[in-house]
Image (tube, rainbow, N blue to C red; front, side, top):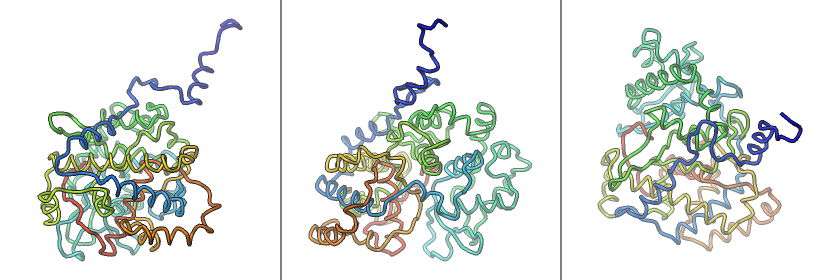
Length: 418
């Protein structure tokens, strides 16, 4: 190379540092089309609609309360069940966790008989039951987060997996056989294509959240969360996106969690966020759909009703995000990667819950805000994106459920997608 020729490696490094590499070396697209598909669903929905004024009102309340809470990536590691190390073993744990992170709700009317995991003298339900089961298995020297183990049907037999996910009650973990199948299928792909490690998938994504989401959906059938809506294929990619978000949160936007386009990740379309958006008055259901949900009747996976709820929820959170940025353009200047909690049942103050429920009472909101001005005026500004909004809504809905304050039940769809 002559002195006059530019160093291609230096140019590549500069482009990467400036975020100019729109297409990573893998050739995979960085656009997931989840948001585009969500808008299409919203535009064509019949039984699910949005209330523009409630959505704008919710945006302001959510932004203010998130500033008061000062959400941070550090929160992810604060919970005793989440792994504390920041290495490849934690990447394996997160991959396993989100590979199996779906469908924990129970049809059992007696709460004392529902599936729970007992670990270190405590019982855990929902998402935390999965995390506790994985941690318990590792303590019992069962390599449950190792892909090669999943493929060994002698060592990783059905009876062993049933032991890993054994309940403290007689109710079995929902969709246990489907979870076993997910482990086998994902283990085959990782061992055949990625040298037995999900870390190599992260490397191939070249620090792109969008590329990693697409890679998961393309390479692993159990992450391919797609449906047909009015004759058009639509993507939701709930678990693929939350996997990327968990990596980002755990590693504080660095190392295995460094993504230059993390804002490509949308809200994670499950059954809790539609429930919370309805509680806030943002999401509205037609009488037939509303009656169906309140009667606790199952809505089939892939149905029009399900697609409308999931897609409209994604679009609603996007509108909330845009409204926050419109009213508070200063948040755009913040590093979003410094402001994210974990997607789980974190402790939320009573004041937060009271505020989020006062969706129709502006006078009470202004009163509370004025009383807090002196305490929050000098507080640091935290960024906001769809991930943060999703986590905030999810955590709040779980707290409301615990306090029996839901205005409507969550819809019931049994699937591996969420």
